[in-house]
Amino acid sequence: MNETAFVTSDHVRTRFSAVMSEMYRAEVPQYGTLMALVADVNAETLAADPALKADLERTDDLDRIDLERHGAIRLGTAEELSTMRRLFAVMGMEPVGYYDLSVAGVPVHSTAFRPVREENLARNPFRVFTSLLRLELIEDEALRQEAAAILSRRRIFTPGALALIERFETADGLTDGEAEEFVREAVETFRWHREATVDEGTYQRLSKVHRLIADVVCFRGPHINHLTPRTLDIDAVQAKMPARGIAAKDVIEGPPTRRCPILLRQTSFKALEEAILFQGEDGPAAGTHTARFGEIEQRGLALTRKGRALYDQLLARVRDAGGQGNAGADYATRLAEVFADFPDDHETLRREGLGYYRYVLTERGQGAAPAGSAAAPMEALIASGHVAAYPIVYEDFLPVSAAGIFQSNLGGQEQRSYAGNASQDAFAEALGALVADEFEVYETAEARSIEAVRAGLRRELRDDAA
Ligand code: OOG
Ligand code: NI
Image (cartoon, rainbow, N blue to C red; front, side, top):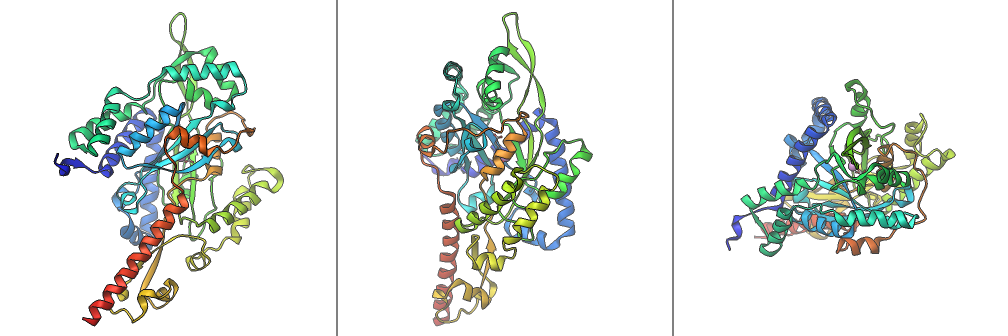
């Protein structure tokens, strides 16, 4: 077998995300409006900020700046989740992180399938936030069994997709033709179907327990429920949504606006009420369902465990104040006030070990390296101008923010929290694999960059001696 005949997983992922984007814009026209707004704001931001533009030229492909960074799906069974893991593996996407959303009243737990290494993220960062319904959190035994029975009857993957997953696993790659066919088959799983698989009564009974349960159980497959392009100025997009006829979520989730962005900020437009058809004894019966929306994100520095602990602590302080959560017209002000305690310059963030950085040799460092420099502390090498540090971008999700996104799109007032709680072992068992620890992923990226710097310095020294 000629290995070079295989395309890379980056290539398959890029093709897949492009086809998904096209499909979603056709299915949810308002999403196309949001994409256009994001492109306009990104162009304005770049025009006004040459330094940012230069920065992005160094690290990103500017042409692809407006493209989707993530999407989300919700699955019903362990088998669906483990097959989904194999499907995403074809595209170089691995499960990273475990998110327990039951504490926020959403009966799911989740992971993100994403490229892990920086070079793959740079080629195409597309991720899918993937949730698994936790039927065990439904208290009504009969209803729980009914939901499980309905789910056990559906087949969300096409035979063609399953065959190509197996082909990939045995051959360790796909040819260009196979990859094209794989993408065509794979997107079928994420397509919207307006015909529910149940009658209206069943839908209503499930919906009453939690609207999310109806969304997962009552349809043929896990329709993609949103896609999310990257914006360079989330505050501007949020402010401009109404003028384009888009009903924006009330607040931006995540940290406040800062000089040095950290983690992830996101907002969305509210899910649309869409016409569906229930099964009926005398033919289909008309109804509506609310599930699909559009979202935008802006990412910043990945925080270390220490930085993340500070973030969680400050966020809890804002949300617990007055017990209002993120409601209230003054939320943005309260958020900014409390986050004044989070250092906002990279020098401090780095020195205090709050964030992860990528270290690279400067031009000077590539020139004459002083003796002993290969072993010198990074801070000394930065001070002497031999090394520069760039923030590593956060590529994961935030459970409190995700819960806020779920909630604003379920329409209902579900605010209860489930007695159930984190169940990472059960999730891993359903997945058929362990999820990677996000902190370890960033630690490895940082460590690799340090190793490259040291190797570079050793080489300079050798060259000098020669
Ligand atoms: C997923 C919500 C979480 C995010 O960006 O935090 C999410 C969902 O609604 O299924 O996508
Ligand atoms: Ni999202």
